[in-house]
Image (cartoon, rainbow, N blue to C red; front, side, top):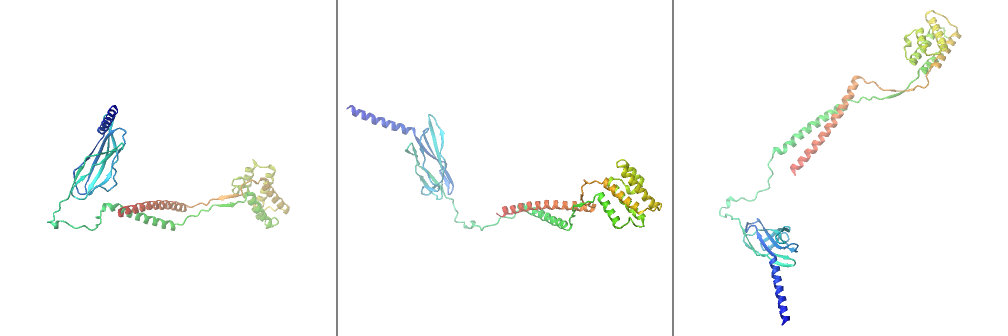
Length: 360
């Protein structure tokens, strides 16, 4: 008897526990609109109320799956959770439905599983309305239209047109400048490196000419002394940097007195005095006197020459004013041609892109 009472008590406890558990979970389905037009959409929201942390599984439908013949599911939304009172939560999921047949549909209950146990919602109804067509007045309906082009809009094409025109003008100017640049031949200014003869080298070369012409023994002593003194004057002028060709013999000696050996200047003074007597006083010298003056000239050059002097000189050509203007003009033409070419290329790229967007 006691064992039987215990079994009855256990069964009663299980039933009460099951009822309590069922009271804690509730599911419901709500539809946004009970009536829709063919092709219109409506949304069904399924809500499950259960304890927080419960495992809730909503029904899953594939896109365009029929929930009932004639009604298809377009989309199943995500599961959302909101807090409720006393440790409960509301679990929700929305389904988007549509239909293309006009009639009244019965939507079967949605089954939601909470912690592995299934709970069904109430069934819903959906009425799909058809569009009324007046078949008695067929003339007011028109057949399908052919494919038509978009109407021409000047606002869409104006920027492309004007930019294309500007590009053509710039390209014409660029071509004209190119012809100007081609016809205006460049000024080739080559820098030359010339090997320069030093003053003493020039003087010794002229003295060698005097020797080769045997002017020392010539009867024309005036010509001999003229060439010899002119050679010395040129040497002194290049060596010391004053105008010896325009100075008298005494003036040249006075300028050289401060920096030269007095013995060498005495010999040079005697040479200039003899030359002045021959050229202006018709003085006749002896052959050995001519030889001595030639040797004195060579000795003076050798004593005063500068050896460590740069023998190569860089000669830069001097351009005329017209040539300088020509060079500047070519530089300006090149810069303008380069700039206009870049601008033309940029405009062309923009025009091509705009045409592509308009015709796409």
